[in-house]
Image (cartoon, rainbow, N blue to C red):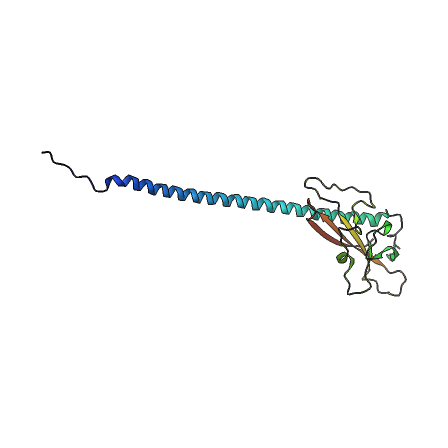
Length: 205
């Protein structure tokens, strides 16, 4: 009788075990690659959102700066019907009767604010909403134009108020007309109404 050769133990099971181990390794690699892909997409989205927010903030800042420039034109040009900003070139004195407590809201007094008599009270630039009807809209008195409301431009035109504050360098408090400087506060908008920037300057005419 021919002799039989015994089969190696477990030889038939080896390929199945190798295939199972390879499948597990491939699945783990796919999981890792998927996690890396999702993380990369999230990082890209965060970078895009950050760049967009920075752009929107810059639009608001630039609009606010444009508001300051328009206020300077308003003061220098005397474009209001009343000679509100006329000064004595030798003493820088002005008539502050047109500057209203709580800020004016009509006519030539629009946006003109006097300081509160109580030193503990908030100054107008903190107490008066710059988004309201007491702030001057860009071009109201200067007839200058400002693009707004479309695309990545400002959602609205900038607005500003002007406060008359005593010149700190003037010591004679008995004078009937003291020298004043102007504190101008301007609000600018980004592409959305809720993106806002506020800038301020002290201006001597």
